[in-house]
Amino acid sequence: MRVATVRGDVSLRARSFGTAGTSFPMPTDNALTTNTPSSSVSVPAVMASIRLISDSISAMPCKVYRKTADGTPEMDTAATQYDLLHRAPNASQSPFEFWQDVTCSIETFGNAYILKTQSRGEVRELRVIRGDRVRVLNEDSYEPTYEIRDGEDVAELTSKELLHIRGIAPFGGAVGLSPLEAHRQVLANAQQVNRFQGAFFQNDAAPGAVIRLPQQVNAEQAKEIADLWNSAHAGAGRARRTAVLGGGAELTVMPVNMQDLAMVDQMKLSVEDIARIFGLPAQLITGDPIGDTQQVTEQFLKFCLAPRMRRIESALRADQQLFPPQDELYPEFKADSLLRPSTRERYEAMLKARQAGWLTANEIRALENYPAVEGGDDLQMTPVGGAPNLTQQQ
Image (cartoon, rainbow, N blue to C red; front, side, top):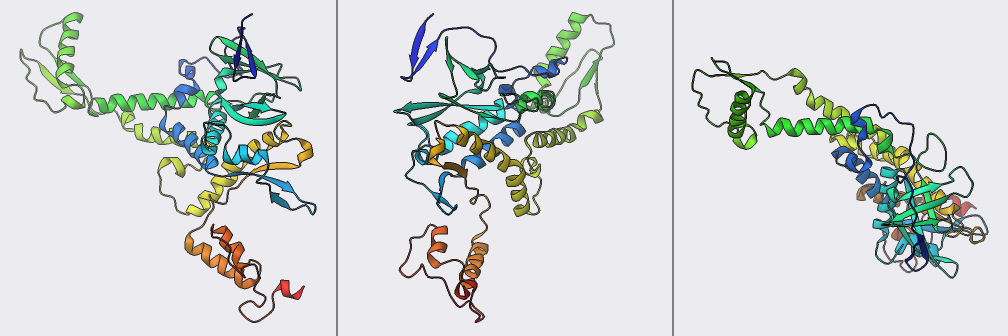
């Protein structure tokens, strides 16, 4: 058995196994269901959905907190975990790129697998491995192991070396289900619509034509005439060319099929189906006007992003190599930037908070990334209106 060493601390044993990933009881009786996650991302609405989710989560800082003696959370910027998750997960990626890889892997493959490089008992680097290179072994046990393909080499790792973030698993088990695989029939239909659209406009969105000849022609002659016509007139680049027909030939243009004209409705329906697959407000990818931007943003955060962020946070916190129980640390994505109101709304809210006596000037300045000023740590004890505030009364 050939052994190779990768990244200095991972031994790879050359051993064969079946197709990467796990099979699921999905219908396969239709040829359209043969599309894969890799081919599904060619559908614009799919790529837009994955990009919207991954970019939104990646743009949120992931910070590390510690519970103080009185139970209040306190950010721990000195913790190693803070450096890994917020500053530099590895030597070649920014936090944005790393979290984008994590979220894209979950949305496409249903799972994210993160290699943990350790030194002296501490995790020093985190790197995402492609989901289709990993196969979960003995997934029914409490200690699953993972086979990872690296070219011709195969490594078998444990949860001490690999962090697994599982996506949704409607059938249970240790492996998440790829939404692209679960809905491959719907996505295959969307691909067919895109192909039809391409062919439709490639022919200048023009209907078909029939050339009628007064004499009988055999199949070879008919093909030759059709090929000659198409070479001169088929396609948008040859549209509107002057045609000359001789020998008593007549050109009949076929009317546009109403089913063809329904293509736009079908395309819109496909986009809405894809929005439902990813749990997105449809307006965010259909291009339809958004009436209440704040309401749609809150729906996007509450019903789409929040469950995904909690899934990632829970998996990180449960990993004992990354977050040892004795440290009492925990990670959390901060979604404040996504819900950040306009400048005018923020300033009006801060003014009320300052005048009501429950935010200091320096606390407000910190929210806007301004440095503290001398005397800015005092609460306003007499709010506008003259009555003492609750802080003063206590």
